Every structure is written in structure tokens, then in C-alpha cells.
Length: 491
Image 1: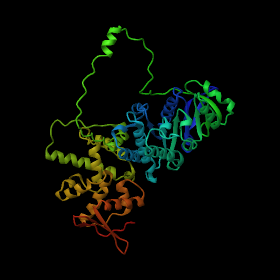
Image 2: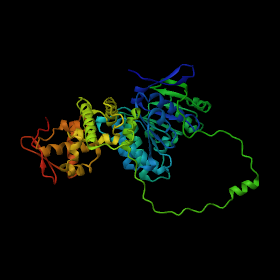
Image 3: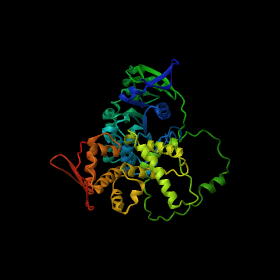
Image 4: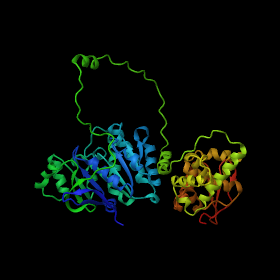
């Protein structure tokens, strides 16, 4: 099925269509001087394609954060996160298919480059199981792939340029479709610009940029002056996703507006020179005493991703006015466990995201009459971890499981269910879970990755894996003296 995105109208008055599937395979370059309408063009493209494909926007000025309210994008403020956190966020955004806006506003040029490179690296390095199609829009791309060295360090420039080169040169096979916009082609690294097959060229005035734009569109250099005459929002288009011949078009309106709108003219205030002198040259306020403060912890990006995924069914439990007695708590816990068991009994549950499972959990709880007692997303994730390990909610409260819970807490949250499933088999002396069972508990199909998960847990010093001569696997929990019975990893 061909998905045609409505970008506006051609100069002949016809609808200007962009083939989204072709764009995902061929990439797009947008050029235009400041005020030519580049950001408006990107916003139109993002709004029209939002229902069809996952998106992420590298946003140096915070212009695209308003997409969150209308289209559900998760806004990630890079200023409050480390590069490592942003790399993990990029990986999780792809895994859970959440559209995001990486807001780099407030950072200097070097830190913008480092944070953007880390986030793009997370998108790029995710495992093959999660190579879903994705639009990666980079506004002001010359900041992240400069043609010449600037005032930033060589390390930061190499990191950023490498990430942009990977996006444009190697991203297609990983499902990443780069859409880059720049004020000046002369400032953009040539190996990044050269990988685009679709072009939208807006108003520009410098001869070197007009010449390069004309060359890219296959126009005669004598026709390059036409780029000076383009109005705001007008672009010349060429490429397999747009038109086989240079085509003039005007970008249509958008449903959202940039946060940083251009201020309009307004009359000057009426003030006397004496008033201005008193206001402008008043004594400055005393400088605040600087105290050493510990940095605030980074927000839980995974929690935000999951919340964004389930935003369409945002349900929060009402505060419980009266505490429940022990019997009522046990009944509530049993009803919640029953709902969760019914969801996990479905064939494809192991491969659905936590956000989707939580939506279904909320609906079923409301049907059961638990509307005022529904756990929030954080509690649901803990319940799901225990349920995937084959544990009832009350089993985790058993004293015998305290050490297991403490050790599980040292692992990433999505791995705890795998560890506790193995611990349960070891405590009961059951056969070691197969690779398929481990994959299902983690929510993946890949048996090879399931084996790598087991290796990772072993590297953390929590388990010891042994493979017997008959090919059966035994797992022993370190310091707990629990061991599984031999089990066939290929069962």
C-alpha cells in the first residue's frame, strides 16, 4: 500500500504528494535560509506522517516540543540527562516504538553535539529485532555535521559527525530514514548531504548555495537565481518520493505551532528619559551566594516512555480514603492476579510492550469492578515481572524470596523477571528454563539474544551456567545454594 503524504500544493494548483514508503528508503535534504519556512515544512511532514510511522526529532531550539500535546510525542529534555542515559533512551524508544522529540535547548554547541550523538547512537545500535521503520528528523543539521572544524572540540565533532554519517549512510538497512534540514549547504558535511536522494530547496541568496542547490536539482546554473525569488513556504522539489522533474510547491498549513513564534511589531512604551535612566541604570541586585548542591537525579526515561505509550488510556487510581483490612487486601490481590493471569495466558502476550499490556490490564480491571483500585504503571511493571517468573504476588513476600529480590534489584528492570523465573526453577528443583521460555519472559523472539541475556546475568555474578555432556543446562544461583535440574535449552 502506498502512503501519500499531503505536503501542500504545486505551482499548478494540484496536491503535492510525498510517497512516505519511498522516503523511508531514500532520505530527504531540505535547504533554505532563515525565514524560508524550513521548520514549517518539517512540521507539516511530521504531522501528516505521524499516524503512519514512528518519528524522532533532533531539535536544537525546542521548536517541535508542541507536537507532544497533539500527536503524543515524548519530549526528552537533553539538558537534564547524561549522554549514557540518552543512549539508553534512544534504544528504548525504538524497542517500544515511541515517537520522541530530543529538546537540546539550553545546551551549548558542544554539549548539543554530544547529546545528539549519544541519542542517535542508541537508535542505531538497537538489535535487529527492533529495526522498525522510523523517520529521524534533524533540524539545523549543519550544527551536527559541520563541513569544517569550529570552536568545539575535535572529539565532540567526530562523535556528532560519525552519528550523522551513520544515520544517512547506513541507517536505511536499520529502518532509519534521515530527514535533514540546513540553512546552508556549504556548511553541511558533503558526505552527509550526498546520501539524500530527495531534495526540497527553499529561498537562498548566496551564490555558492544557489549553485549547489541547482546542481542537486539538475537545473542549469543560469537558473540558480530563481532561488532568490522564492517566497516563504515555497520550495523546489526533486526526488523519487516527490517528483522525477524539478517541481515548485507551496507547503500547506500545520495543526500545531512552534513554541518560539516570531514576535510581531508593537508600539514602543511611553516613558520619559528620566524613567528610563532610573530603570536601566539602577543598582544591580546582590549576587546570590552560591552553595554546593548535589545535582538532581535524572528523571526515569523508561517510565516516561511507558507513560507516553499508554497515554491514550491514562488511568490513575483514586486515593483510598479508608485502609483495607488484611482480608480485603488478600481478596483484591487475588482479583488482580486473576486478571493478570488471564492476560498472560494469551499466545502473543510475551511479545507485546508493557504499555499495551497495561492498557488491557486497566480495561479488564474496570470490567472486574476494580476501577478505584487499579495499580499505577510502576506497580503494574513489578506485578508483570513476578507473573512472568511464574510467581503470585504474595509469593514475593515470602522470607525465602527476600535474598532473590535483593539480587534481582541489581539488574535492569526488564531482566528481573528472567532472573526470578530461573530462581523459582532452582528453588523448586525444576529443569532449567529453555531459551524459548527465557525469550518469552523477556518479550522477544530471538533465541540467540535469550542466550546472551543469560550470559549477561552470569557476568553480573548472580548465576553460574553449566552445560553437561548430553547438552542439558544447569543453572546455580550464587550464594543461595539453589540449582535447577538439568534442562534442554532447545526445548
